[in-house]
Length: 69
Image (cartoon, rainbow, N blue to C red; front, side, top):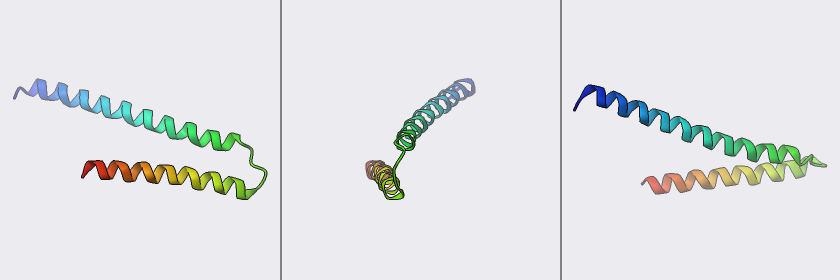
């Protein structure tokens, strides 16, 4: 295969991966900011929201791992 083509394809894949990672991080950052903006009245409320957030992340990771196998 042509080295120039390989270099171009590699750059394109790296750019796509970077864009996907940025999109993913923006999504989870937005979700964390929503939790922060709630201004919880007590620690228990904050802990509950954080456990829900962690559960969502764990579930998504589990689905991604399962789909890859």
